[in-house]
Amino acid sequence: FTDMGGGYKYLLYMLLFIGFMGSSPTAKGQCTGIDAVWINHTISGGSFSNMDIGVNGILTITGGVAFSNCTLKLSPNAEIRIIGAGDLAITQCTLHACTNEMWQGITADALTSLRMKYSNLHDAEIGVYAKGDAAIYIEENVFDHNFRHIKLQNYTEPRAVTLRTNTFQSTLVPASLHPGFPAVFLIVPHSSNPFPLQRTTIGIECDNVDNDVVIGDETLSIYLNVFDNLEIGIYALNSQIEIRNNQFDNIHPDIVNDPLFDKKAAIKAEADGGSLPDSRILIGSGEENSTNFFNNSYNGIYISRPVMVEINLNEFFNIDNIGIICSSIFANTILIKRNDFVNAFNGISINNCGTSIASII
Image 1: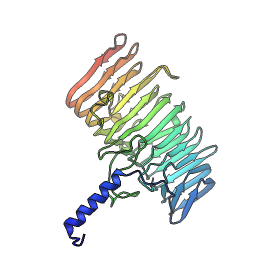
Image 2: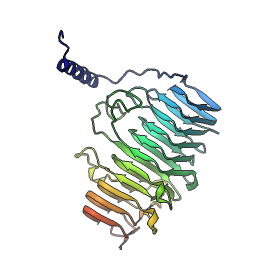
Image 3: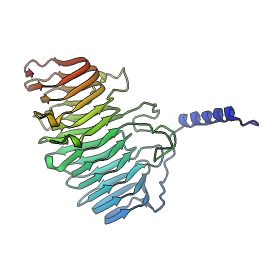
Image 4: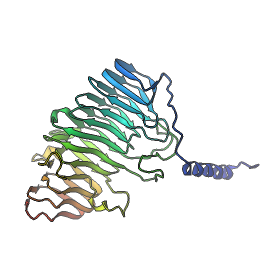
């Protein structure tokens, strides 16, 4: 253009932006860092403070390692892997993708340790993937725009897990605020054509988690986890868990014609006859200080298949569909008592639970 007035500039910008969005994802490249660039790097011990680090490939932690006040920029498919005697501490750090393609996340193998506090973790396929009684202490962090924020798998030791006072959310923040990349949508593994309101699929996933692992805090409401703008807040499969002192806001499925649309909820639990046959879930408790809050969501709680259910002292506000759904639960106990429903389209639905004993108080 010879005249580059405001209108022409805006038109040219929009054409370039649309062209970029319609093109293939950013080419996989190496992340750079002001202070260090690591490629398939192993650390057996040490402390790192106030550093800007580019992480490429796998960063392997095999001993006691601490990061504080650091920024870790991760390349597509990069991973932080804790193995063996690995003990990783992350304090007041930010971890994010260095392009608009996701990185793998942090994996804590069996019997390792991860302590994470006052930090921000963005843009990973699974933010933290902890296995086999890895000790995880995750408190006062923000997880944003990961495909899944946290996954726990094959746990038998409840004392190995602390998950409280975290925010699990899904946002597309303006370029001026996002630490990773310009105003483009994140390219996620399940979609080469992401859309503006695409949400994180699950906040916390539990797969074969045994012995009443607690999500939230057992007694103190000041340690509230917040789940905001997700498809599912907490999902449990073949697990025994307790969910106390959590808040769920704006939990809605993305796609109306998804066959699982009506089966998604702020909390979803089910069993499929896996390695933990006596699945159970406690949501809330008999005490006032263990309340969960469900606000502006499609479904509050969805429980299906053989799961022992106890849902006590929870509060539901502005539920579009149903507050509590129990479906196809056979030969088990269903106890629902002292829950408050305000402006819920339906309060409680129990269906196809013929051989179960249900008490609603």
